[in-house]
Image (tube, rainbow over all chains, first blue to last red; front, side, top):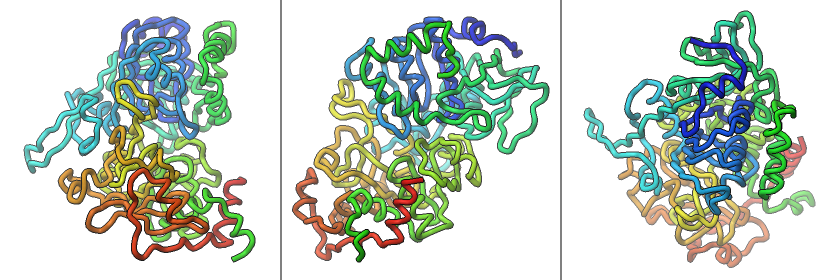
Length: 274
Length: 252
């Protein structure tokens, strides 16, 4: 059952050192506030799972929270590289990181299989590329037609964390706009934490709204502005300038560390703003 | 041609030429950057009914501004439908419902295969690139692929450091063997010209050069011994309508 709690309590209870943590949100509704709370609580050796690592995982990798990254696109969307991710892979700074990379279609199907508690998903993909020799996929023959297909293993994170616009007091959650793979991530994980822009008395139906019943979520925490510099459609807008700013700031280690100390790690500062 | 046209930059010509490829297309799958600019331009000038599909799940987006990311709010607000990532790949891309895909890459080889994963060795890369994203399945499923890339020997290479996405694989017949539905690359649009696959060998061949560009210049910018079509054409320069629409769009 859902508990409506504070973000710091939720993270402290649900996220442990060494966990496989999926923080999802496909360019929209990225749970920055929750990721920052994980950093402040100094969780280590995490297996970070996410289709598009984005700035959030760049920050977490740069501060040394990740042992492994499972992903499909490690770029700063529309801007270029993720420099802290690159520094970890190219120069093992702050330490070496294990990679398991897939295609978007592969990751999406892996989450869907996890949500269904199936051991794998079947798809057409990966063949003819160099990806299969560097990742976990296997050929499989269709028992009906004989067609050669690809099996991708289910993703079963220890914890999934997503951000949504609203929850009601019973912890039922509604998100709208680009839905990404959040519902699948929540249902694939053993434990789920949802941060929301606001808690309301009653959820009002929205076009394209995705509702996740509270009884599959362990904790809901209010985090207004918690998806910035990404956005929560209808409530905040994407801070495209920040994505450009990050490209410059994160190129070098020292300015990166100084910025993280000042804006994320010191609890006295307003962390939800970025 | 007017004075305005003579001032078109090579990047503008590349965008205009890419947009022209969408004159008769019903739908196009696009990422951000030049592909997105070209597709929005195509809707403005050639094909107002063109359906723009972005990886973020927005189908039929009608952006007024050029989006910075594939998930910008304007794409979701103006779309006919907004779908989840599993739905995008399993119900829309995989079955070949989208006609043209615009793809970019860090490296392109002579058979139109693409690298967006690493420069150097996989385990100890010189440059770690973002990775596959949706490209492998998009290139397999969409009915045709148009690659948009800057023309340089760093990009057009004899050998890819990593094959992220299949164009024609190792040669004729490979796509069919791999079970791909789509036809594969039909054009590579660069800032110097257009390469198209040869009908027999599938090797990318120079079929079109942009204004002011010489064939030798394109050869020098290509990392393999580039074949040139017997009926090499000169790109018709951007019209006033194309160029002013593009500049207006970039200024929004």
